[in-house]
Image 1 (cartoon, rainbow, N blue to C red):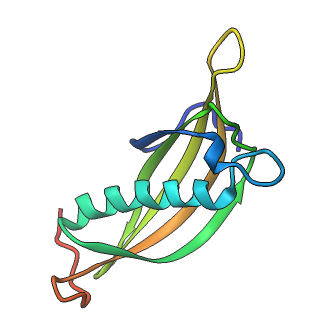
Image 2 (cartoon, rainbow, N blue to C red):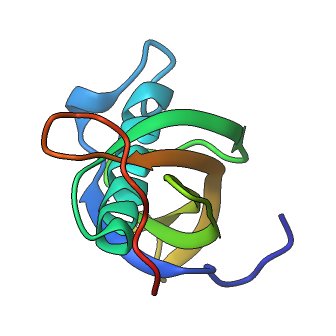
Length: 129
C-alpha cells in the first residue's frame, strides 16, 4: 500500500455523492465495488474486443474510506489473459477536495476476473493482441 501514484490506465472517474452513503456516514463499500467492477469491465471488454461478464473477484482490500465530494478514480491494469478469461487489477484512488490542496489517496484495490462471451452468452476465446 506504499504506492505514491496509481498503476494502470484511468478507466473511470466518478463523484461520490450523498446518495451513496452508508449508515456510518462514509461512502458505501458496495457502491465503491460497483465502480471498480465497471472500470475493470471497460478494460476487459476493450482487451476481449467485445462482450464480457464478471465471474469472480479473487482479492479485495479496503484501505481508507471514501467521503462525499471525493472524486473516485479507478485505474485498471491487465494482469493475466487466459484462453477465455482476463484478470484485471483495479486500484481506486480518491481525490480529496476538502482542504487547501488536492490530496490523492489509494482507497481500495482488487482483482477482478472476466470471461469473454459470444452473442448468445457462451464463452469464447480472448483474441490475441
